[in-house]
Length: 252
Image (cartoon, rainbow, N blue to C red):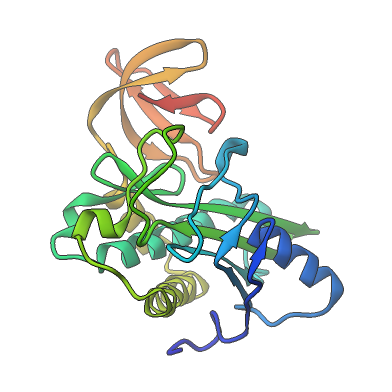
């Protein structure tokens, strides 16, 4: 492992309900160092955004969580942490094959897409103490070598399906930890403008006219930004701008 702290202490249960839940329980039982990772070959109850599940075939993908202590962030700055981790995941996926830079995008708030297909997702759970974040547990699922997915999933893809080659999961995990650490240290150095700029450049459908389900109706709009607290900003054809929570909007 080439990192300073991310993944240096690693817990490896053969299987668990979810790595986020496992790490939450472990942290309640003893003090753990920043960067502690929990990685498993099989999640029974992998979780995603909006209460969705994360499907992963045993031994084919990366499903892990890691612990951060971002006490330098205030509760209303949570989304800059989400941006950093999404960028780290985007960096990793983009490094896995030639030409990925133009194909790999972050679908707001933090899914990773290759073209119009989802290759990875993130679930971050933050704990607040007073006026700061006391700890954050970030769960990551990346489709690496899986080739068949449930028909219930709308648009999954894996690195193997894209590239045609088998990936070494241990090497992928180490590379992913390096990407996370690099972006997290960037955040600790207060390079927020760089993170914001990179996130906008990496956004799926940014500036493109597309259809969205917004609350009870369908609208045609383009993504023009993200608010400081993480709301998606859509601009309608009449120039009206909408700030959307995750529960308000769906990509069509």
